[in-house]
Length: 222
Image (tube, rainbow, N blue to C red):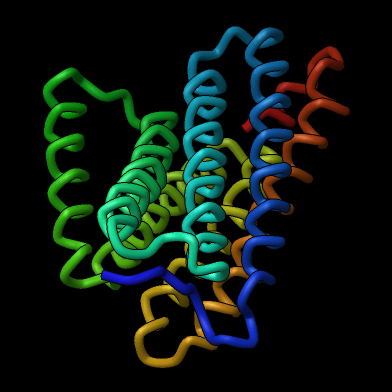
């Protein structure tokens, strides 16, 4: 396996800029979620911070892989390094989505073990079929979005609506990534839509911080 390049040639490097923005946004939201956790003492916000941290790390690893491909740093013995870093990137991404899922559904020890096994298996199989990783990410985000929508329908919190929209946008971005093998332009669209989804998520948490502390304003919590 040679150096990894994501998307069409004319997009080389531009995706790393977008991914850097995603890292910044994710870390900022993670910081906000920890602040809300300190206020509400709700474990879901702590899990959310962990999930966002894992996703931020996954983007950083992906950026490293991309830059290695762009500048042909990884070659010869570096082929094994590419495999290792791709494995770490995919593992961190799926692990982040799982932690995001756990903010809605409490997980037992056996469930976590099973998911860990399946995540590693899917990540290894993705070496044979890259779209499998993207499709798994899409399915996980789709489930998370559905749970978010159900919570909004039940509670009717304004931030729950914003949260559902942001998750829906991120879910759509991973659907675009699935079709990257058909046309690399789908990767470009996925990158842009994904950033829009995380920016919407950032807006959600800004709203939480602005209004969540006020008395009788629990409706602003997600």
